[in-house]
Image (cartoon, rainbow, N blue to C red; front, side, top):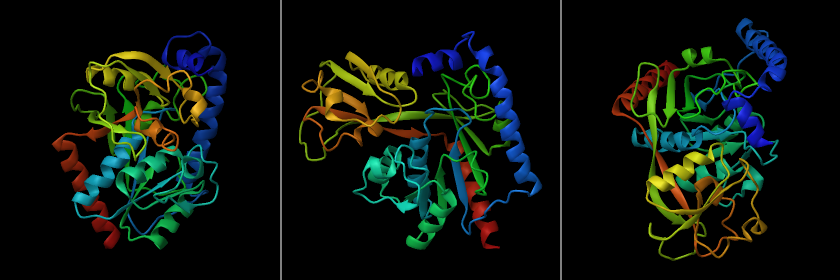
Length: 331
């Protein structure tokens, strides 16, 4: 089903025209919702600290989580105390709750677990992002909030918007859901403060280049003390993310030979049965997949950590923007 949808969204499959009328309906409903906020019929909630939204206008993975991790670490280096909020996709978590170091993906979602495991940042998840933000402000010493996703969650007022695009997939066929992958039209990119293009080679007038720099193989099970496989040893590559091919290509650029490339659905809830055929072989997966396999991982299971990297120009402009917003909040 997922591969068929991708052929429609990112190819020229004729079925997109069958779904086109529904895209017009989606455009009407989403447009009316935006208009309601613009006219004040629906009200936005402003928080006492700056809010940075990291989102996208397409469905599926574009690299938002590495950007959130980058922002947490970068803001700390600038002297700020960031916190993160998220929907906690896949957790079925309705009420807001804090993410602890021992929280599980089933409780709070795989991406929140990964963010907290990597950074130790104060984080809250829940269906109501405003309630999550308020819980975070009550529970932790936070002076700026990063919203992981939520670009279309207009009830939450925002100070800075970062939109992340996949350089390879772009905007697909350019159509709105369900005929295409777009949550909002391409016009939305013009209203964002920063457009980050994951996989682009250089900054342009329209976007800032973003690259994912591999940080080496790490054991999935934290108590494992083994030597990672070398590039001379074939590995099984496994990915359950929005664009698994990007991960496989990254491994190959690192010199690894892939004996198999196994694709699971994004946010797949792994169990040991998923690995029956390959459990005894060296396995390399994404960091987001690894966070769900820690309790049953084998000794030769590894994940490739990656770090988002940006130009000095982007960092300078972002810092200027953050300082301006922070100053206005304190006036």
